[in-house]
Amino acid sequence: MARIRTIKPEFWTDEKIVELTPWARLLFLGLLNFADDAGRLVNSPRRIKMQILPADDVSIPGLLTELLERGLIHFYTVDSAEYIQIANFNKHQKINHPSKTTLPGPAITEDSGSTPGRKGMEGNGIGREVREAGCADRFPDFWKAYPRKVKRKAAEKLWKTRKAELDPLADSLLEDIRCRLAEDAQWKAGFIPHPTTYLNQDRWNDEISEARKRA
Image (tube, rainbow, N blue to C red; front, top):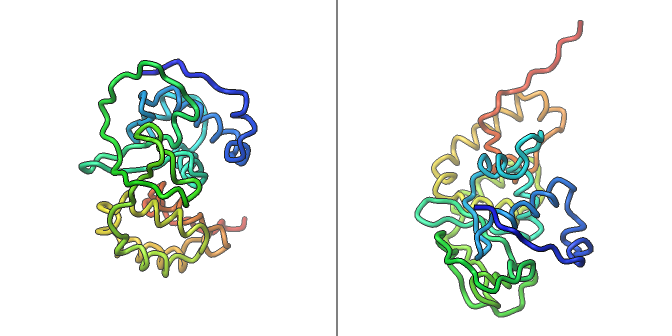
């Protein structure tokens, strides 16, 4: 259920907000409307698209990744279901009588206060952070094979949120990467997506692009 939210004037000059693209900034405002009173949503790009930007030609997974990389949201999984937690939710919203959330919260640990950008999940308690549970067993294999070495921390964090899905697919992803490097016209021309984009948008399902034939 959508909720009325307030936007403080300082929102517009916040460093993380200013660094966003306009579409990501608009999406973030929409997430505030559709998050529950603990700042949580189901991580369903299709649903979010229909709720916030139904008539616009934009990639919701890509915009969510942008918000993730800026530390404005966190992804987490509970019982194989994926959720979004808006970071520092109480920084944006002051709710006098919050409704009880029906969405499970992320696993949390006490924060030492020494990690800027990851603390303050205030919807779950001030001075706490998401615990990045488990280890990315197959992520090193993916990273070694992927040709565009940018934003490793963001890619590894994304892998961890989808670990149960991506670990079993790792060999297929490695084969897809090898195939695209050898045959995909876009990749061979140097147009290789960021690893976070490749993972978040399931790019291994895309068709191999062929070079355009000259007339």
